[in-house]
Image (cartoon, rainbow, N blue to C red; front, side):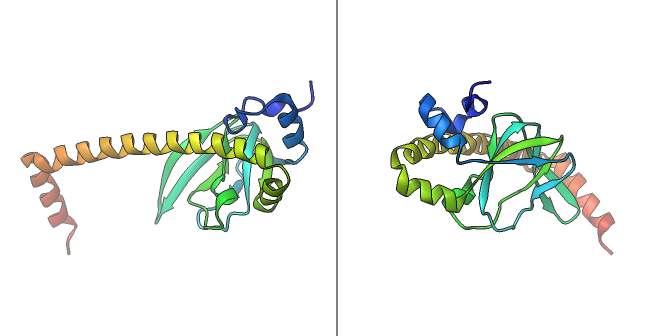
Length: 172
C-alpha cells in the first residue's frame, strides 16, 4: 500500500494534496484499542483527537442510569476534534464497539503544526469547519423533530391526561 493512502478518504483531509497526506501521516500517532474499551469519558480533559483507521466506535452521553447513544462512527471518521481547538472537557463518551486501529493528533502537535505549516493547518480547519457545520445542521433537525413530537404530545388531551394520571401514581 502506498504511504499515506489510509487517511486520504478522511473528511478532515479532503483538501489535502498527496504530499500533504504523506506529511500529516508522519505526524499522527498509531493506537490500537480493544473492543469494549472506553477511549475517553465525557468530562475528561481533551488532549487529542482521533481518526478511525479500522473499526467502529460509539458516541454516547450518560445521565444517571440512562445512556443516550448519539452516533456510531466507522472507518475514516474522526472524533474528539474539539480538543484541537479548545481545552474544554469532552462532550461525550467514546467506546470501542470493535477492535479499533486509530490515529491520534494531540493539541500540542496541532499547535506546533499551526506554526510550522499554516497552509496545511488551514486545510484541516476548513475540513473540520465543514464537518462541524453538518453536525450542527443534523442536531437542529433532530431538535426540531423532538420539539414537534413533544408539542403534539402536550397538545393532545389524552396524552396530557395519561401523563397527569401516571404522575399521580408515582407520587407518594
